[in-house]
Image (cartoon, rainbow, N blue to C red):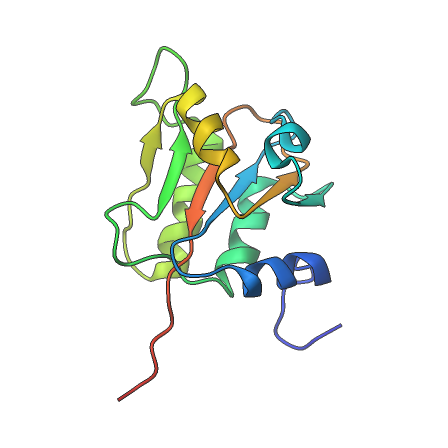
Length: 147
């Protein structure tokens, strides 16, 4: 165990988060997402028994979001209802806002476009989340040194 680190942050997940560079995308997915086929030969981290809001909270406790893009977090749109935010997405939005200390609305991306974008991600983190549409792309930002 380490001090001040959420225990959800496994050694493999911490390695992935540290290895990612500015602008790299992390796929955060529910249990229904085709994680293995999307990840291919890339990094696949499994967090069974962890829901999406818990995983989001843990990841954003150490990973900065990209401040150079309008929407550093993209959510998978609900098919036929692109503007609808199911409860799982509302909960993730609250975690984002809490981590950022301000409102930072997610962007959205159509389901099949999400799959294509996810294939370009640095890594896939699949959770035990059983609610549908618990799929997100988190773009890593930077931490700048003080001048």
